[in-house]
Length: 290
Image 1 (cartoon, rainbow, N blue to C red):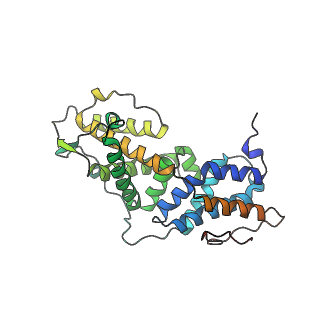
Image 2: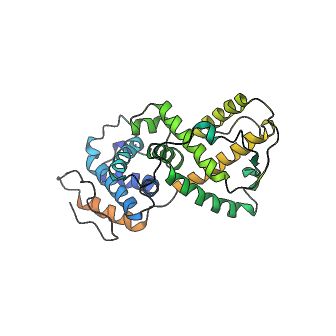
Image 3: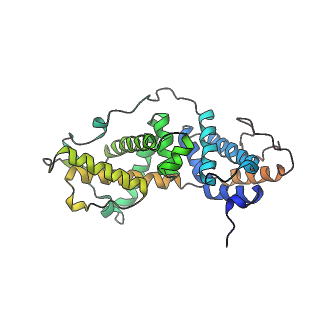
């Protein structure tokens, strides 16, 4: 039987967490630091060195993943500098929904998955989603990144950010709609038919769709039973969600991993001072021992 990671010593547990989550935390850093690779590497280094040095104090009351991302989120807040022009809030919910649009998205993401449209569509979708994530207000961006890129649960994110789960869901759902709206602007469109049912029904279906995305399960209502507006809305939500997952699955650069493993080896002695923000900025060379 494999020993639980919480029962392992730091020199075994932290490299295992690095291999499992280093790429996602690096991706989180890229999204929160404006695409700056050095800043993203700094975030990974600060997160895992603090985790390594604090492992003896990890009592196992939380999942190691939640504990690790809590360290990353705190480091992210310290490093984040509000960029010029960053919005303070998102548009209203009604402005993010397509109910009153004259056109609907004319694409079925599921049908396109194996066709020649796939490569072109997904490359364009990645560019649109990357830009849209950068344009989100910081509280919405970090909630969205933790959910749809890092693939944490709503309850884990609530623990990481010190929020109520309902607040996390609100931020993630609004952020998804903002990404969907940005993505839909460049997709094929056609004239919108008259609504098949009242707006309240569409809103109930949207809530059910978002809840299914949160839980990572299939949406229970068949496409054929949805109105054209809901089909277009849900297809773009699925495309945005799938694009986020692919972005989040990026790899940790090998030099960053090698530098961290060398740092762990140098820190195995009794001295366990906490890393200072910005210490050991990664430049491609091995960081000096603390």
